[in-house]
Amino acid sequence: MNIINSVSIDKSADYQHKIQASFIENISSIKDNNSKDSGSLEGQAVKVEISALGAEELDKVRQSWNNHPVSALYRTDIPVSKNDEGVYRIGKVDFSEEEFETARNLVTGMTSKLKQGTLSYSDHTKMALAESLVDKCAADSFSEDQRQVIVKAMKDYNSRLVNRNNELLSKSNYVQNDDESARIYWGARQVIPEAAKNEMERLFGRRPSGTSALTSVATNQELIDSLQKKVKEVDITDSSGMDDFKAFYQKLMKSAYDALYPDKMRSDSGVSIDRDMNDIAKMVDFAKQWLR
Image 1 (cartoon, rainbow, N blue to C red):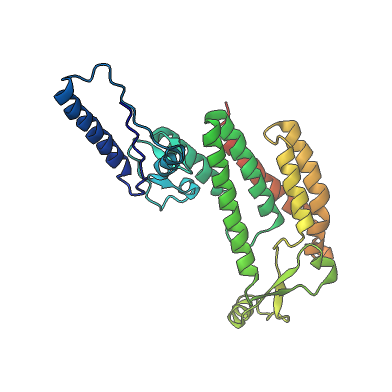
Image 2: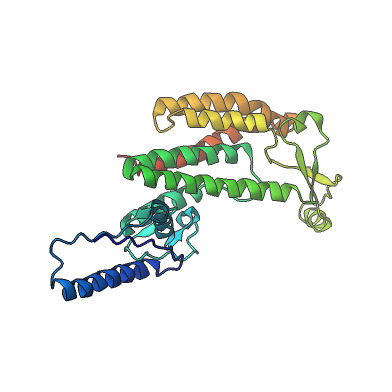
């Protein structure tokens, strides 16, 4: 006897229980009918089929159970619970409790080294480096599916930083830099509020003459792209790779920093580059804790 039971997928959280109940009900019915006829199910073929489309939909809904977005790996304020199978499902990929905590520590440890707000060239460089390092660390400690989720979380966090940067620059307290030489790299100036002028006059005895101040906001997209491309290409966890990138960074950023400082402060360019590289080295040191 062949019984074909076409299941209409219930999208609710308890749909699987309903399917199981339906299966049991059908089997019980078969048993009752056959008990009357032959008293046994021996020799009877019992077949319950779910259509191909039904099975596919079934898996999609099952995957959505207690599924958390990848932001759960960097947003510690979001409650994250295990699903019915006793695992954490992040981005449709399962993590054990230990794996989830480890992945979150990796991502949050890296995000803690990035700045929120307006972004400098150093900030953009560190964001790209964070993606590269997280990828390298995750590949060393997690499955391929888990690695992809972890890297996606890092990229998602960086996208939010970029969106926030753009949102701030779109506000009225930022204006275009009117200095042609500096504008190549630093295209935004910040309007100085009257309260800030008063405070500067009180502290330094001198009131700013201009209405805006030059910022360290990176606006040259070609330079941003070059720095991010290079930091992802080089294995910066290796000393030779670090030296290679440092030479590249110095070459590109010397002109940019020179345009930021007045002539009498040009020596500060080297100080700024050293500061940036020190921050980058700290990120590498953090990543090395995760590499075997």
